[in-house]
Amino acid sequence: MNSLWLSHFTAASCLGHGLEATLAALRAQKSGLAPCAFETVTDLATHVGEVAGVDQSPLPASLTEYECRNNRLALLGLRQDGFNTAVGAAAARYGRRRVGVLLGTSTSGILQTEQAYRRRDPVTGALPDDFHYRTTHNTYSVADFVRTAFNLKGPAVVVSTACSSSAKVFASAARMIAAGLIDAAIVGGVDSLCLTTLYGFNSLELLSSEPCRPYDADRNGLSIGEAAAFILLERPADSLDADAVLLLGAGESSDAHHMSSPHPEGLGARMAMVAALKAAGLQADDIDYINLHGTATPSNDAAEGRAVAALFGNAVPCSSTKGATGHTLGAAGGVEAVISALALQHGFLPGGVNTRCVDPDIPIQYLTENRQSAPRRVLSNSFGFGGTNCSLILGRAQ
Image (cartoon, rainbow, N blue to C red; front, side):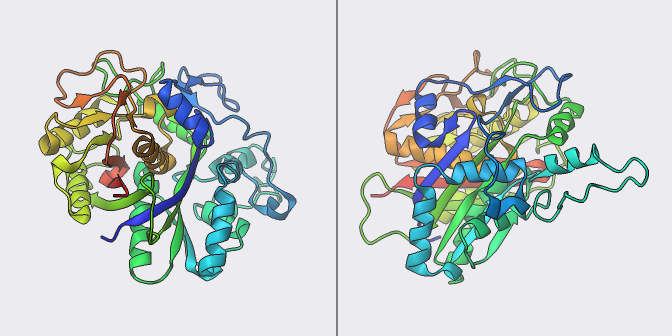
């Protein structure tokens, strides 16, 4: 795989809007999780990672047909860190047909549908006339929205493979660029809070009643978050400064072990990590830090931990950042790619927040405190329901 340059990137999550807020929260080991008071939820004892300001950020008049929480969150993210300016420059440089949009999401704008069902006609059951599935709930909506907002004409794709969605788009974009279809791509993901997700995970008995504790001996479930993360991928410039971050490799697998449970030995996770190392032309001892998928459910952490231990032993520092952000589902891969890029640029390894006593039965080197370091290469894991898995390897330009 040819390396690609993360020329610009940004993220908005419960840690804050943009890179500066995200970095400050990570350095302070701050969690953005808070007791759930989302929308009409009053009966779930859980914590969520809600992004501030989404409800107060309606779309501009030119984009009102896309009005929904997910697209509001997308626009909020796009406006951070000069990302919109960078996309405009790329479109001018390559042409609007040569910039692709490849994004991940799981539930897209489903909250809009949930709210529309409350307003059905009491006689006919018909949904209200102002509800537009195509531009809101439809999974493709977020890519169509971003493409329209930037007036781009290139390919637009949404990947919806649960929690691996916004990691897999890196691999898809790399293939499109290698095939000569595009010269640059907006990748990442957007997933927003909704009742379907909260009550769905509750029905699976996977929600924690406290802020989640990845890899803790007494971990008892996940905390749902929301986020928007965007990365502009391009071929590397002729000259890059030392802080430039490159996508070195991406590995995908689909073990299809079970609809909602991981393979107990982490078979698919291991396959994805091996494939990423192969794509990057690297060995296990070339990795300096692993951003774990680490959802804080008993089976997920155990399975991933076994896979990591089988490949890396306990030589590589690891942590999950979901104790800080919550599990942002379809946006998790993008958010954690941005966090991994920040770790590379700023020379630190983020400790896992909330974890009090690391599970002694998982033989990996799990960090509970930040570590000052200068990683050269970082591996980031994202594993989804149904055994659809993706690992990314990012590295500093040498």
